[in-house]
Length: 227
Image (cartoon, rainbow, N blue to C red; front, side, top):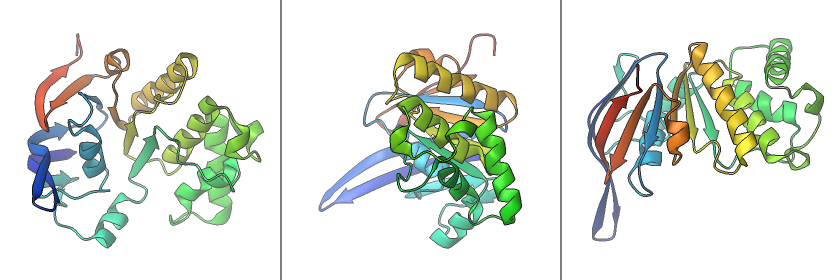
């Protein structure tokens, strides 16, 4: 489903060039649950951003559903990304001036669903994540765990094939973190391809496969025990 070949990402500041990703080769199959780990600064979030078409590689290939999208323009990437990829971030990224229902509905704003169908889809994901009674609340009126559930609801509202999660439990206590991990496992079990960046070895162990990066290179690519 997703293939990287010799993928490299460099950043230049003045005369200094920094390599964030160094000739990465990676295949991610449909329905897989991949955890990306490694120390701070190793390239985890950079890799996630490229997988999510939020950033472009400096060199190499990224094959997305049979198309090499490396070098595509922002408009093409936006069209490809819309409805196909969902994002869950550590910081929730909710808009506090909007209600829970309105925040979730943003994911469907530029899709093909009509107004009634959008409202039905929002109601469906709110019910799925236990948020129906919070539909009119603002994010500031919710706990951290509830805010992350709203973020997950927004990420899955368009039923994306690929869900990317960047430290999704980083701002949560252990109980709410465990709840978020349970939700992610359920979504993966239903067929959603899940790629998660995490510092937690415990959470990484729940994935079917773990990728460890160091200095922008893959140093471990291992299936879970019994996988």
